[in-house]
Length: 130
Image (cartoon, rainbow, N blue to C red; front, top):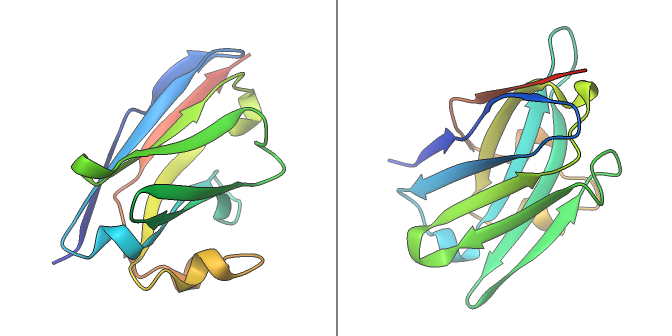
């Protein structure tokens, strides 16, 4: 049974930082495409970043809206991916979700879509005040 457990959300002032964690289990992590999405009230769920996991490393992608501010990393031994968020803005406020595509296929797409991810975490709230 695949499971994704997120942690690390919270409230922070603009310009601050947070690090989200996503602990994965129940599927083959080493070849998966892991992703972070976010959804603000009344808005569509949008892709924030992806991480193509392979033996010995990770290939990452970040959406233009967060490029240079957010970074994805992993601890392969813990099958955990992280989203380091720096220089946070009020418009970054949203529920953040970790997602997994165990086939890895989604990370090969030019624009990964949420429908390609079969496993989701429960979400963690990030609130940035001005």
